[in-house]
Image 1 (cartoon, rainbow, N blue to C red):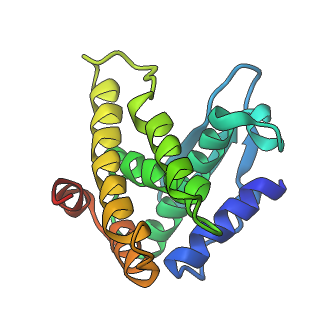
Image 2: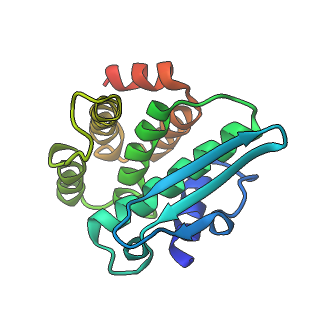
Length: 193
């Protein structure tokens, strides 16, 4: 489970998180043909988490879809673990917005930013060419589309105002703020782009 741990380490280092449990203890390989999902069960004793990832997402040759599923599962886990630790609520929309931004961060910025043209190509593939599994008229379909729209606006701002100008300290501060923000502030940061 080297790749989930690597993604978690990059996200936690970037966001300055020290107390997040090791994601590999929570990862299970999903059934054949499955996609990434994070299962959460709340009880009187606490919260149980499980990250299911397709086997194809755990190999080095996973391709963009597999890499995105891996980052998304780990992103969900990191945000949920931090919110649980801080005793803060979270929403499905927050999780999805954060995961979309984290995909761009992990695949295009960390550990070293891709060149501008390669990063723009990644952004196009992640957002403009995105395919949604849930129909547009469903709650899940609307949520995923809103998360993608908000993340694309925010990522465009990151590129325009920070990455192209090599303003990495300010980029990191804004991304840390976005990570810690609730749903309303995340949407506000996206709309400000």
